[in-house]
Length: 303
Ligand SMILES: [Zn+2]
Ligand SMILES: [Zn+2]
Image 1 (cartoon, rainbow, N blue to C red):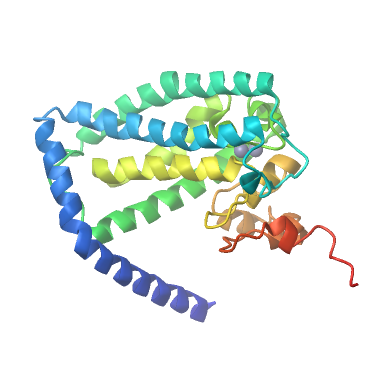
Image 2: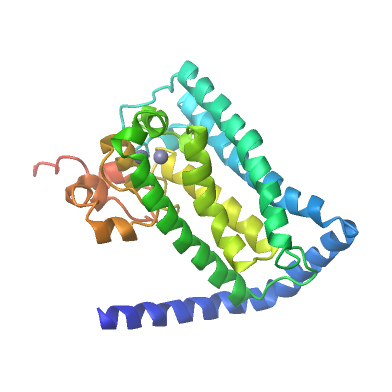
């Protein structure tokens, strides 16, 4: 255990060193870009904050999901569909069910996420200016993203488990689970109460606790939305994080409640998952052979 932590720390150090070198070369570029943007807004910080925390994540979400929806609706290109996790599902996706989900997603974004971000701006201005002229240092940004990710894991895991309590599940979380084979856009298809307490609060709390700069907050929101889209998208694509964990949650309901999987390990809520083929496939792979072929459900018979 001790040596594992040491190894992880060493790996972390060398990784930040390499990234820092990359950042050193482009750091001035980003600061320069930020300065130009900052001057452009002439002190209209609230407007800058809303564009960064509403528009940028909104565009990230719909650009990624627009591409995924093209694949879900047309079943093409087959280059992508061959990476489907639940191979016999959503071919093609049910349009009525999809339209119903999209309406709820837009409602959640416009009427819940939007007003929440306005509240967050006023909360953050109480502790200082989140839109300062100076970007945070590279290390600071990286540490803040790591912190936000841990806060999200803790808050999402426990609120998600709470929503699986029979009393709450029936009235609230069942809606999100209508999709036993999820697609990207379903990531924020949820009852409004679930969207506020289990989707938004775990994601927005980190930057509020830290008093983060707008650039970090905006990047974190975009990353969080991209990551939840990938974990719901139904395709285990090369060079992207594995969605097997959360896909399995939609398939079996009582396994894999977290984001990172750390708390599931701690609480033993990944026991069944760890005995499956999906678990064997749960890693980021870097070639073009779909994992359903390289790790088939039934081992190939020897010729
Ligand atoms: Zn889900
Ligand atoms: Zn659930």
